[in-house]
Amino acid sequence: MLMLLTVYAGAQSAMITLKKGHKTIERYFPGDYINCRLTSGEWMEARITKMYNDSLQLKPFELVQYMNALGIPFTDTLWKNKRNISLNDIDAFPRRDQSVSYIKNGTIFQVIGGGYILLNVINTLSDGDKLFADNNGVNLAVAAAVLALGTIMHTTHTPVLKVGKKYKLQYVELKPTS
Image 1 (cartoon, rainbow, N blue to C red):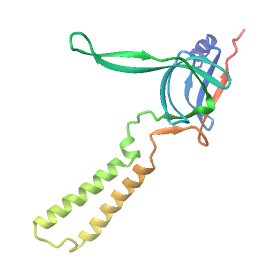
Image 2: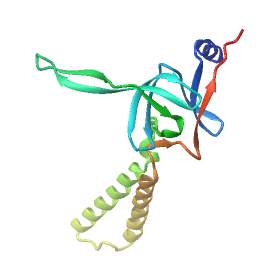
Image 3: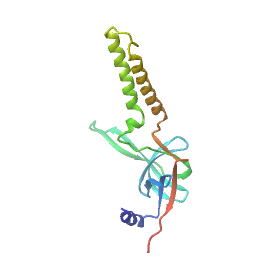
Image 4: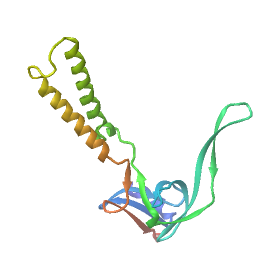
């Protein structure tokens, strides 16, 4: 892999890396696509046309869907004017989809806790039993705690990698080897 990166990097003049501590999360080269949020709150999907030590020249685009002459839906790329963006203007990147994101964002705990409470209440009342008889109150309290944990996880989970304390953007000059 290092040899492949060296061969690929030999044709490149620079790259931008997104790092978490000393670990590289993503690399961007001229010609690559980038999806990022700017400090203004605007999300931008673009192709990197040039890189400088403190900025990027981007060619933003948008995928547009329309009906062609036959009435069939068609998708086309709408290219916009080039923009120069300072690296300091990049605020965040979307978090990659993860296979267990429903656990990390708390959704599974909300579904389990809420579903147990709902089924328990329906079954208890339909049987004519008291809601908090025997150990049912403890069971409902545990289910409510699981639901609350899922809600807390859901509100604190962020779908973006925010550039700042934890994640850093770094410009790397690539020099050709002789």
